[in-house]
Image 1 (cartoon, rainbow, N blue to C red):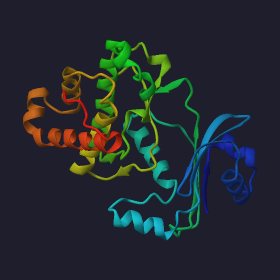
Image 2: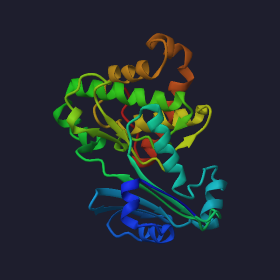
Image 3: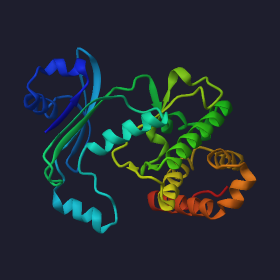
Image 4: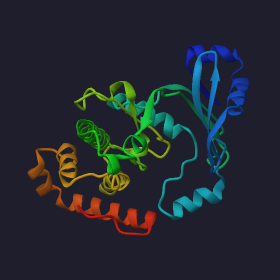
Amino acid sequence: MLLQLRPDFAQLHGGDRAAAFEALMAVEGTVYREADGRSTRQFSNRLGCFFIKTHRGVGWVEILKNIAQLRAPVVGARNEWKAIKRLGELGVDTMTLVGYGRRGFIPSTMQSFVITEEITDATPLSDVTRDWCDRGPDVPLKRVLIDKIADIARTLHDNGVNHRDLYICHFLLDEETRGARTAEDIRLYLIDLHRVQIRRKTPYRWRVKDVAAIYFSAMDIGLTRRDLLRFVRRYGHGGLRATLEKERRFWRDVEARAKRLYRSEWGRSASSL
């Protein structure tokens, strides 16, 4: 059994590691998500408010199904634990780790959890942008958010990290920085990291998937062609013209995948810019 807890958190459970593991796996709280042997719950103690994501094994059927679909199965909390640590090393704002535990080694039955601090006073970008089409966006905010998201995506991909679910709902805007006018001054937390992959170099197909997910999830918020080109310039290297010339195929594949996602999700074609 492996158990790593922040010192102040460990003191709440005494010195019995096995008992602490059992107590944390069974901790009561508000259930936010429950599926495929995973559960995400919010709970509180005298130290504050936290989230715990527990994994209780998905079984060999689910593992083999994912492998047959050429998808890496998520079999425990270790992946999210590693991803949070890696994003911290890269300077990408995300959740703050409090604890990690694992019991067992067989993927189908392994039990594990990861605990993080609650992120307070932060709003998902899907909520921030929800009424932009009807009321019009805060243009300076829109521009700095485009820059920041492009910076985060580029940082991940340049360092061998891909998210696999990089939709705008998984970026949380720190409300204290909403008035910032540069990407360096605004804070976006990237969450939902349980499917993150970490390699020496990010494969082409996973770069396409991540950037297409961003585009797909922002298709109905009133972006302009200039907004898209702003993202391309910021994500790329060497300026807009050089990026479009060097990576023309990449951006065409991003657009095609985003449009396929849109049609699959909404049953109609996305408006073209």
